[in-house]
Amino acid sequence: MKDTNVKGDTVKKLGSSIMVIYQDKKNNYWFGSWKTGVYKYDGKTLINYTTKHGLYTERVDDIKEDQSGNIYFSGMNPNSTITKFDGNSFTNIRATPSNEWKLEANDLWLLNPHQNKQKVYRFDGNTLYELTLPNPPGLNNPFEVYSICKDRKGNIWLGTNPVGVCRYDGKSFEWITEEDVTEFRNEGANGVRSITEDKNGDFWFNTEKRYSIYDITTLKSNQFYTRHESIGSLDGKNTRGLNEYLSTVRDNDNNLWFVTYRDGVWKYDGTKITRYQVQEQSKNIKLFSIYKDNNGELWLGTHENGAYKFNGKSFDKQF
Image (tube, rainbow, N blue to C red; front, side):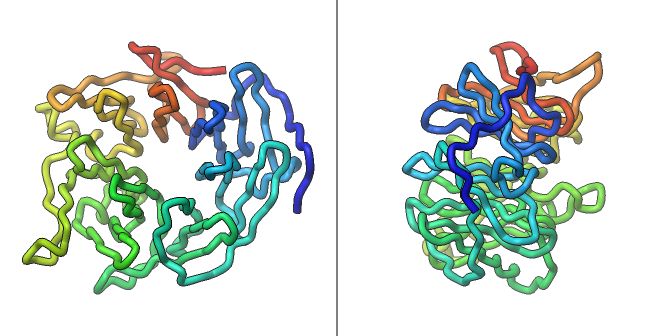
């Protein structure tokens, strides 16, 4: 279904549950909510789009953009449908169940949040494929795909809950199923929500370890990674709260920024760790994601308090 020249509702503030932030090629900001659709900010006006304007679901978990500048939104829904916005109107695209696993440079990969269904979307510009990620060898647990990341070599990484991390290189699936990416505190509710490649090519999976990855064809063993101490042990205090952060980003100076749920934001410059508290009324707020925009500026998405932006010293609430 398509509705032409959608205007949206002009609003003065964001909804509370801003879980994903994206800036497009035209420098518009998009804020995806879990409750009130998506918000667009062009630097002057804040516009809210919901299902009444053509968005398929009020919950937005992922935002991507194609080479032509079309924006795509995916979120929790039982009908395997994403929404495309071409600048004027919304078009809902139903996925085709498929085994067409392949890597093409211009394909878009989007999350398909559907409990324990092992699904992910691949969009080649014409067809939206709903793919089912196979189980790790020796495991037959149902799982959900929580995160997607494309590395410098073009491989796709998929973070799951609760069976670990998978790398797809266009030919095969390689799994990391170590305890720290599968067995989380609080009965496994966290999952691998964040995958980040640092300046050295190591990977951080919001867990107690970081991973160096190798070309499996050059190794004598089948293990294509080694594990190292991660952020929670690097401050000299073994900060337990940092062992399971939710989101990570590498800034333009190659610092790593880590978002924790209730314990603020932490920056690691390769040597020292700096903590930034994010509070309202002297209480730490619940953070969910961190995003680097086109200018290298950092934004936070939160569970209940909208969006925040870093001013060089602290994170300030926006709108």
